[in-house]
Amino acid sequence: MNQKNRVYNFSAGPSMLPLEVLESAAANLTNYCGCGMSVMEMSHRSKEFASIIQEAEQDLRDLMHIPDNYKVLFLQGGGSLQFSMIPMNLFRNSKKADFIITGAWAKKAAKEAAKYGEVNVLASSEEDVYTYIPEVDPANFTKDADYFYITYNNTIYGTRYTKLPETGDVPLVADLSSMILSEDLDITKFGLVFAGAQKNVGPAGVTIVIVREDLIGFAEKNVPTMLDYKIQAENNSLYNTPPCFAIYMAGLTFKWVKAQGGVAALQKINEDKAAMLYDAIDNSKMFSCPVAKKDRSLMNVVFVTGNPDLDKKFIAEAKEAGLVNLGGHRTVGGMRASIYNAMPVDGVKALIKFMEEFEKNNL
Ligand SMILES: *Cc1c(COP(=O)(O)O)cnc(C)c1O
Image (cartoon, rainbow, N blue to C red; front, side, top):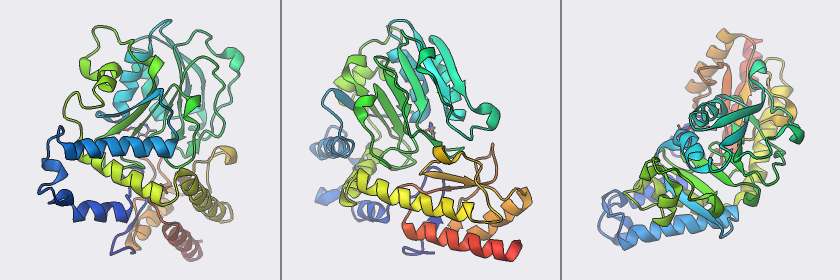
């Protein structure tokens, strides 16, 4: 236990939030900044909420260095609705898209896109249980594709991109759900990025979409109004009632990230945390990481003992020790430690110490 009787929560999502963010929300829960009501109770057209959403957008723009020719949208429907909204809005000429399949989320995105156009799967690491990011040859890219799709960080399998595909004039689209604000990105390399909030930003309910302006305005007439980026952009994410409280919480996290020194400062800490944990795994006689070294995620660290019963024992005993939600995704088993921005260095150290003791007692 740590931080006021809270456990170290290694859940992949919804996941740990910074204690300062939760405490700030708690202090303002019944009476937000003296306005006499909670954020949950105020009109989304009020001047208080206008400041909340505008500040959240500006803080995110500052943190990610988002240029003026990109729109920032706060939407609903999770990362999964973007699997549909992207093809509905971005299929505008050839209606073709290139995909790299690095996991279950990319596969779902490709399946949705195929309902609206032609999906070309350039590479997949499915045969090796997605333990690496496949290399691709730009000679095989579809020259007239409307977009090129990747999952930047693969939450379930513990891989991430370290080198982006060179797609030239074809807009690169990336699912940042489990890595947004964890490392510095050059947003101008992308046509569109998106992330559900519940991994690294706030509670579930809001999804961030950052989209270049020239890609907006191509939805077909039969696309539902709510799913048209143009409508959402023209209305500054206030076409209808947005997920007000989730946006407020995301805004508090953005201020927390700024207070930590910004994304580059957190990236440094994230690299240190991940290196510590991977070193411990690689130096252990009991635990191993199945992921190719060059593609290892900074956010989701996957490891196994090789014995499913021993994995179960580890997960159960870790829980007793206040290190919770260390089970791997239900489709892959083993262990997964999600060490997002909000996971303190001390949490990772506590996990490593526990692993060493477990190994001593069970080898
Ligand atoms: C969690 C996750 C999703 C799905 O997000 P929802 O908000 O539950 O729809 C999509 N992509 C990635 C990479 C994820 O980690």
